Length: 253
Image 1 (cartoon, rainbow, N blue to C red):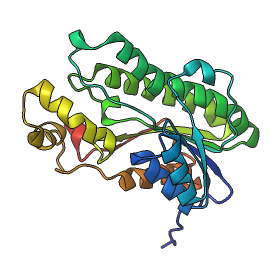
Image 2 (image 1 turned 90 degrees about the vertical axis):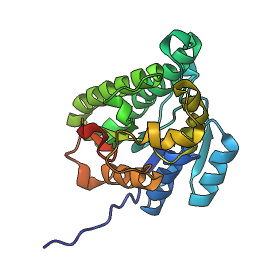
Image 3 (image 1 turned 30 degrees about the vertical axis):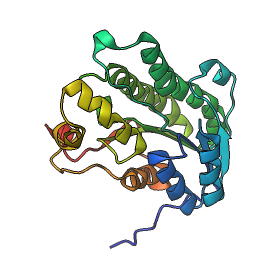
């Protein structure tokens, strides 16, 4: 029997988008505890700074929906976690085109541009980790979330293409696919979900969010962070082009 060594990220630099709250914050804390120097990238600069101060990291206030500003970016980081995202719940015929475009820019084009910015340095060092926070909606669809589902399905393809290109250079690329996570993003959906489905807000979690899961609770951010931490470490060096579900059995159906 071999001793299990905890993941160490000593000497590694990590950049986490949407790192000021929810899954991103949980990843930032876990990575910092493992020894990484973490940059918190977030639209909310004050919140990013608070998390950075808490973990001894760096804050980067950035609007990732402004894709043109990222086009010539160069990132010197060993680990990139593409986590930033928003949600918008509407039937397709009522879905505002500008909202659709915004979600694709933020959740698909921005990850592409950040990966593009980070790969040259990773290739030079012969080591890198791209971790894309996808969703169960990267593998399955739900009604009224056309933009989110489209963006996450696209992120799956981007992650796999990155895995194929990065493999010979020591760079892995993987997706994490949670079901509904206990985060502000999910809490903010409850009113919209109630409206579009014609049910009470108090019934949304049980009737909508947990209906497909065999385990009837929300995923906790630290559970997602624990998988991200493993993917970032040396033990996952042969894991690439994969999509890991944390969905309580949703995709087993």
